[in-house]
Length: 207
Image (cartoon, rainbow, N blue to C red; front, top):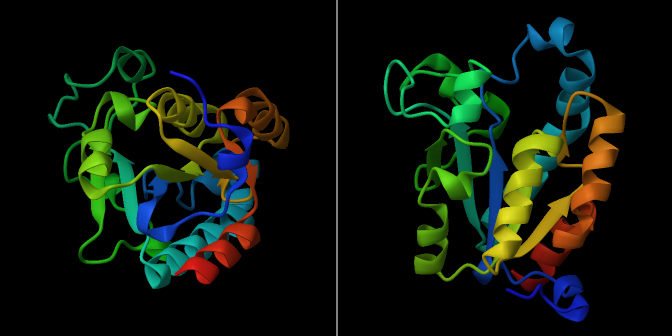
């Protein structure tokens, strides 16, 4: 499948055809313990990524964009349904456990979609694509954690499936600035990269 022409990729977003995807911003990933275990991630998430995601969510709600959350959450208590990667890395949050809750700063609205996933790209372990086609979404703004893992994989998979993918570079983060920058450079050919302020302005103008 061919990628979107450059002019189309850079065009302002249409809220009616856009989803703001918030990946894995949950209590099991961002929590006080991460301040010591993962200091760069914790500080960049707290001070930059999370406030910018909140701004995008607010702008999306006002303009009529779809807001979709994904959380890492197994469908079975022992996680036997997880991807091989999650099994090998022992990455598992049991269904309904506190670790699966979206963080308080980004609480979902009462009619917003929350999808449990068990793979890096939600395209591989959720019905996200099916839902977006039903709703009429063709543009996906990807935010959340981590830039070089679930963000990267989702951007690439979405582009291959014909979605216009957009990554606000200040609304995602990972465990170091080097990893963040390297990931953005690696997947820039699959998406439009911009900043939160520009997208908020576009959403307001078209909303």
